Image (cartoon, rainbow, N blue to C red; front, side):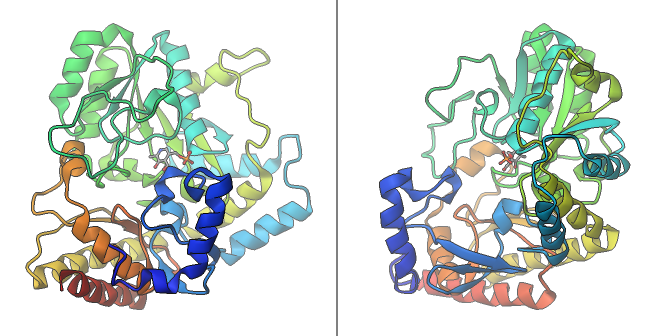
Length: 433
Ligand code: PLP
């Protein structure tokens, strides 16, 4: 797919860095999402809506570190706050008043959060949220959804493989990795209430929690059907289980996350990505009586983590979240809507069937003639044409993911959206030629 796109001619230094990196890092990277053919771009720096690679090429960055940058790269108020905090000591080995200030901001925006704890990554926040649920219920099993992504720990590594997968290869409950602990995780079908009922009918007494995202953020951006999340919560509660809503990615949809859109109040919510203002930071929280599990000198669930609530992350994150207000959300999401409509138009103009999923500032372009409404459909969606289009987009200075996902940041203007749509039209024309 790279051939003819101009990608290789522009990225010689990335190619060299990749060859050298492979000697010390498996596939030359530190996270699987960054692996693509012929080799990934190696980044040099980022500023606002732009990313520069090691060859000096500038890209409009629609990746935004996998949705975690809401104001683009190096957002000045966050950088200044983080640097000031680093000068005052980064990890102080004592609780700070910044934690309190940030906790109050989150409590205000997410009414479900009566108390919370900070963590370093979304993975850890989810791991602790589920542990709290097991401690509270005295049960072992977790129910997740096909295509639901909740980080890297063992309990949630089921049915999260990426396309292209040949038709007929799908296996319910399939693990995504070797070496996992033998855990009793259950997997239901997203947007399929009956599959949730069936799991509870069979194992209701063993399930500690159901964990769901408001959309399948890493699997086609399939959105929860209206009332699906509330139905899942009702079923969980009817069987004495908790409902954990993973808003690590979806908290960019509104100042109060997707729970405002779906009018759903989970028992525990997990937060992350944008809240660190570009630095690593996450949190989990909920009703006070649930968070009691972490309370005291000998809590049921002791939390550890040398760099938890890292003060520079808190400082950067506070500055970022303060600027992520209702007006910023409205403008950002309006541009997102315009972009999705524009992408559909580009493909329609060439009579190419396309599915453009997404909400708010997020989109996923799937070049497929069948709609993608489930993880199983997404897994089997063809990827060839998108890969060819994407290599041309990279060569044209548009940074976008191999799976066709992207998002906007508040650093982008309407002009940036138009520039992307023009580049997309050219890329589609070139790839179809
Ligand atoms: N949960 C969701 C919904 C996510 O999108 C992610 C990251 O992509 C995670 C959890 C894991 O977060 P982290 O990568 O910070 O460990």
